[in-house]
Length: 340
Image 1 (tube, helix red, strand yellow):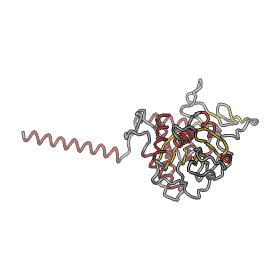
Image 2 (cartoon, one colour):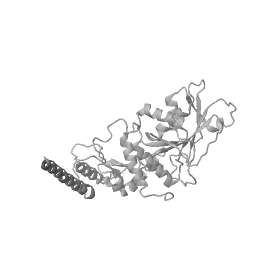
Image 3 (spheres, rainbow, N blue to C red):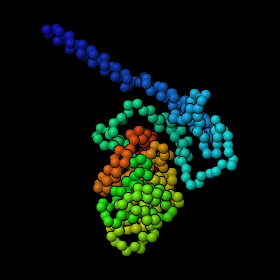
Image 4 (cartoon, rainbow, N blue to C red):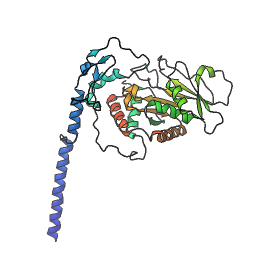
């Protein structure tokens, strides 16, 4: 009996030793890739398609008859199978555009920004803490603002949205009065981002209405009217560092800081307002990921915005949050306060 127990103990020690050696080799040595090899090869093969330097091929691009891989998607004024044909009489859109000027930067950061996602990644509706917000992503967003010095985050709440567009209306909803006989008046200083008006109008809420230019309300004496002012700094489209025009107990402001980054403007001081909205599209150029965040001072406003996002889209795509995390980590890798 004693010999049997001793033998079992010895076998257990041997098995434990073998497992430890195995994990030591796998963790400390070079891990042999298995299921990710094919996906990595496909990604690099598509990325290597040149499209004459005037377009790009994508993994999810259209595969035309006779082609093994996706077709080139050409930039404006270019066409042809490899985007080599220039159209000299093409029209230029000066009213909008994509932040593709940052594409060369990310091509230089190919290794640090690349992301390969398992088919079973984050299939649940929520994270382990039952929230829809990645705590690690929130931590890196706070770290990024600390490095850049463009926003105060200490003691504030952070809420995620599908780009700044969703967050802007979530903020309008959160700042509007409940069950009021008079809706909140939403205003912005001309020239302003057209989405402020279009989005406010399309929701057609009884709690808020768009009322146009801020200056029209500057000398209003109606102290009972709730007013919500969009303050864009830097402004779209003129780049001015705007400040709130209206003040008073019934006036609230949403500070849209989409362009408040060093590659667009000087950063004289950290923004320190009650409601501040940022977007990944202007930080990294990844407009298609549809990710933004708001920094909120008041807990009640934060909770109302979280409720809006939860009911509207059940949070932000977990895949978008993962990509945002990878990009922000790549952008701020080893950075310290004042480096940017």
